[in-house]
Structure formats: structure tokens, C-alpha cells
Length: 129
Image (cartoon, rainbow, N blue to C red; front, side, top):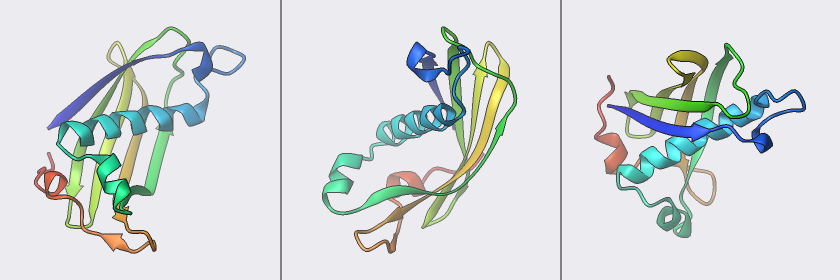
């Protein structure tokens, strides 16, 4: 399953040169992951109210080409590893088919004391491609 998330680059996303500030790519892929999780039926607000939250355990990112103010971007996310306790995703940001950014992100869930929690069944059932 490949999840697609569209977004537009606004002034607030850029530096003084009109190029997307590097940390904002991480925000873009976070928005895409949050949308994916929601579309899979996981209510993050309900989980949070019980003291359970998602956390990024590991991330590897490559910045390949700049995005600029006004660009329309597409974030493609696909699960590459699913276990009871972690989810590894490949996330790619492109513009008109040109890859600008790639990341491999490991997601886990933790409880109020920072202890690991099993992923919700909605996420564990997703088979890696």
C-alpha cells in the first residue's frame, strides 16, 4: 500500500531565499504519516488521552533537491517493515515526478512512563510492500 499526501509550499515553509527550510521536510512527512494513521482508523487523540503516543525512534533522511515557495508536492509513504512494536516507513517527497527528499522512519508507541507499547492492530495488519 502506498499512501499519497498532497501539499503546497507556502512562504512560512521557506527560508529567506524562498527555498524550503530543511526541518520543514520532517514536518511534511509527519503530516503525511498522521493522515495515513487516521485513514487506517487509528484515533491519535483517543490514544493520547490514555497516555499512549507515537514516537519517532529513528530517521534517516536525504535531501536531494530543493522545493520552493509555491511548489505543489506529493508525499508518498509505504510501510517497509511491520512488527508488533515498530513500523518502518519509506517516505518520498516529489514535485512533478522529481524526487526531492527521501526518508526511512521507524515509528514506535510509548506509554506514559516511556515504556514501549504494542502498535494498534490497524497498523500491525499492514503488510510491507
